[in-house]
Length: 154
Image (tube, rainbow, N blue to C red; front, side, top):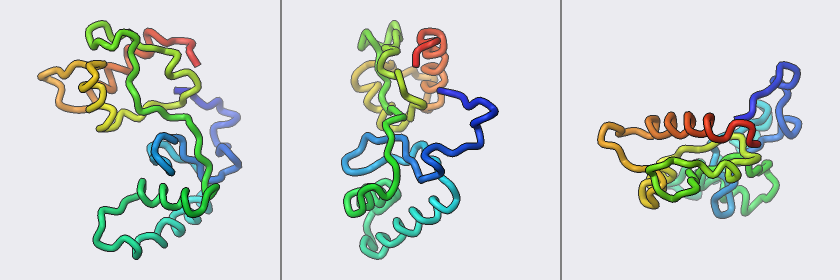
């Protein structure tokens, strides 16, 4: 995770234009990390709310609405590939937990989503521990491993 320096910590990226940093879904974005001015948030929220009546009675949520907006009105927001949602180890086995630091180069965050967790267990990049019932356990352990193994990797 990159940190802001005091001189730029109050400057919004892309001149305040709404920017979504997880670009890994078909036709859209996953809003795990978003920046933008209040005017941009209001503009995009109003655009998303236009879709609600079209989907009455359906399971319709922010991710689907962003995808629809991106298809119907491309360039309505900035979409940046800055967040990954994958746990990538060099070994593929949860025993050594050797992280492939190159995978995370240029990323500013890891979205440790439910899907990330399910995939990591399925592909044995992490092992389920009896005492760990939450993503927080694995996220904390991964972050600790990342700090020790990938220091200086950007």
